Figure 1 (cartoon, helix red, strand yellow):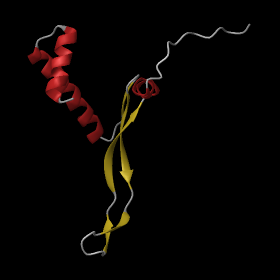
Figure 2 (spheres, rainbow, N blue to C red):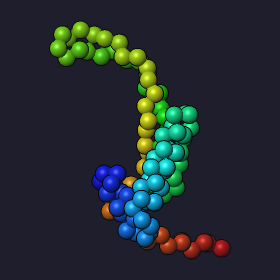
Figure 3 (tube, rainbow, N blue to C red):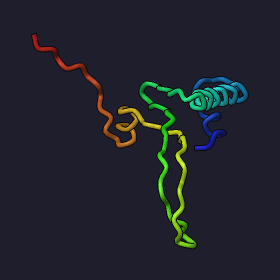
Figure 4 (cartoon, rainbow, N blue to C red):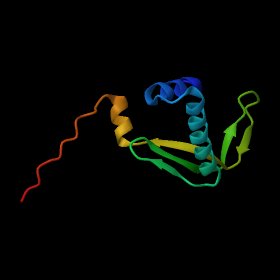
Length: 103
């Protein structure tokens, strides 16, 4: 799904114009980027968590020459899906019924 398709879907489901939907999507993505750039993590319950993780320095091999090179440590954005999202993707979504409490 592209950003334009996401805007179209938000517009169709909410009844908001495409221009307003585009602003909402843009601001949401901007907020996620801003939080990650500050080193914060962003948790959206039922969807997942966006974090910044540090990748350690490592040795790699240049595929052309075969020589070893050092790859420096760096920060990378990471997304961890929630249990609900994983279950939805896997098709294991079950109706959540509260279990009876033993008295």
